[in-house]
Length: 328
Ligand SMILES: Nc1ncnc2c1ncn2[C@@H]1O[C@H](COP(=O)(O)OP(=O)(O)OP(=O)(O)O)[C@@H](O)[C@H]1O
Ligand SMILES: [Mg+2]
Image (tube, rainbow, N blue to C red; front, top):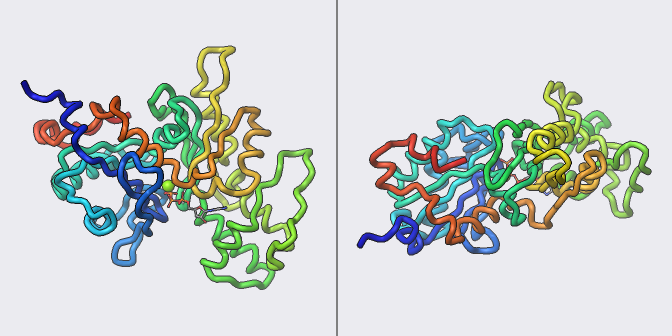
């Protein structure tokens, strides 16, 4: 008797690859942290723009390096779980499937939204994920293990834009810094202000003398008010409130909680500001920078997940479109 599909993939080792705008995290399913974190670049060029793959040859080169060198696996022997950005074009998944099956010859693969995987990293299947990395931010409703597109909003203001804006603020005072020191300054000194009516935080001792003005508050505020950068989109707070409204359960039931994911959500004061202004409980795990990868690692190692893989033979019969029914 042939093995059930679920059992066939149990024997396979699974690899999880989260290709972000800035860095790609990869490792084996079941591990507690990625084995490799490398810049998402190929031949010195970026592979993604605002969280969406724009350089497919570059992605192939990057994944080749990751699979063979960083992880030392043979792609013909591993199932690959890849991640997809919020509201990415559908063709993205199909091209990833094509690359993994036809380019690397993997036996099984799956592409899942980062928002869903980030929720899994909190051990949750319902909630509103507030994500912000290097190139893109989003808020996304997740309900009972499905990412809800109608409760998902994207904002192309994230860590890179904050670093640039901090540079502009300092330039206007005649201070010039290169990108790397600016980025470090942002990460160590910037702070999201508390909600209206709350006392402003005191500048902690040891804050760089370069940031004694209000730049350290003004810089992260553009995440919440992108109009400062001339962008028409609502900010992350407003988007989170829309996601909460659209993913709520039955009236009178508990509001879903906010789950933070991505490096830019490490900004000091951000979880508190979101919780205060939206009046919902907010979870901000210390390891949230890698939330999507961690959730993928957790999910792909569960027995119950093994039936979700898209097997090679199914892809062979149905072509790239077969990746959709399995994904949410
Ligand atoms: N403590 C911190 N405070 C503020 N920003 C931080 C902090 N630590 C990291 N960051 C910022 O987080 C960003 C990187 O986040 P992350 O690694 O989640 O992005 P990514 O996955 O490469 O990109 P994306 O998810 O947007 O496609 C960088 O801009 C970095 O400066
Ligand atoms: Mg990311």
